[in-house]
Length: 191
Image (tube, rainbow, N blue to C red):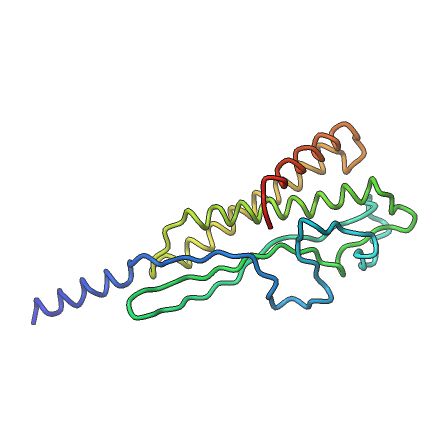
């Protein structure tokens, strides 16, 4: 009996730690309302009519881009083989993004587009980390959460650095450097 319990325990541990196959993909199938969201697309830039939010008049900002990235995950089991499917998306929220009246210039729109671009760069970073991860039945939740949090923090730091260095777009030299940096970074990706 002692050996039977030991064998069953060993098999359970092996089952719990078995490698998953992982499938990481881009998706636009999310729980977010389709009318409120624009998913990142390399071929479509933002336009001022995408900014549907109500401006905060006492804000120092003349425009705000509300963007980010997320994921949805599910697990499929076929016998003893598991597969984790992770759909990643990058989005712009129309209803929480805004521009003050009379401030909708091409220059400011380019600055705001770069906020969306930074979200995309962070999402691509997240995907690359997911592809390198070794998921098992017992660790996938912890690893997925950790990688998302790391990538999300990188995005927020990059967003802050971008606004700080460009002085919210007022420093044109720094803005041009960021424009070039993000353009090169994104040109290396495919959507």
